Length: 345
Image (cartoon, rainbow, N blue to C red):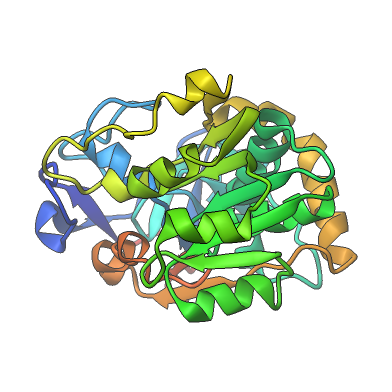
């Protein structure tokens, strides 16, 4: 039995490609005491992956020669841990590989909901849902009647943020990159307005969609989008800086926002947000997210690709705006392993 995996070969400048990695195979060995062998089923592809390749950030970078980092869901194939028996579903940093051998304390068991796909635990019931929940409610602190703007609103996090904004009584404006995405936001998800940044002038469109100004901005994009939002801020506005996807592939320094002075004149607050700071509080958010789903108030969609060999090119969908919802790569089948027969070979 072989473990196929992607090894980071060099730090990319600009767009990621398979040339930045090495496609490698190694034998799979039984796990040592206190660890388990996990067969990877689904890999979450997130903008953070591009940050992890680049250098130091909120987490140590992926080192050259290491397996590329990634959050995944898998099944325990062989266990040397009393806490995680064979057959358990788990989530953790499984990486861009088909099998992972990890200590038991680096994995979280999944108690699967019978009416939800397993991929939901990489979305609304995983780190994506926690990002939307804590980022908006703890950092943004929206109040009923306020105006919330969400950039990358049709993406994994943004689509949940917009819906939670409606749940708590906000006027919600989403910014997305196609007419189809905008129709999904205002139709199925119930946002009050949506702006196609590719075909509309965002500053003018914000003036029409948010005539009373902007109280909360959930920022996933940065660049010109953030600059347009800064020009419409209300006094005491809050900006949740969750991502800057417009500049992750930039090869030259990106100019700062021209309307930066609005933070001063509007007494606004801009706060960076990383979901890992809130992981110890996941138990507060997950029951509420599940309840909203049961009530039909919170919807999500998965953009599912297949084949670990396609991971580098599939990741680029995030930076091209080509994904429709949470981008997930299927690595293996959910049924019994076609290879595992009790002893690795």
